[in-house]
Image (cartoon, rainbow, N blue to C red):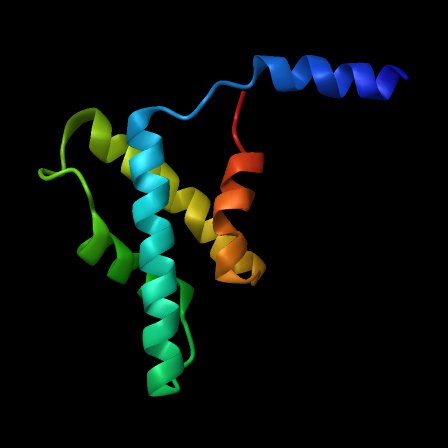
Length: 103
């Protein structure tokens, strides 16, 4: 009982994603899918650092790389890097990101 109560109290305090975070997560997810498809077609192995650089170069959604949107993008890229190092299938990234929110 107590464990359930603590979990319920914790989930109430978790903040929703901001619009910047939502856009970043969506762009990173599209980038992960496209990079994985490209590597499957070419028969190459996916390197985490190369994948992260490629996504950052091709899928940044906010125009200029400055101020708050860029900081949010970098935070989300770091979360994506942790996800990539786990070796989970790309299709579970949105669920992983949703459940790894910081309160």
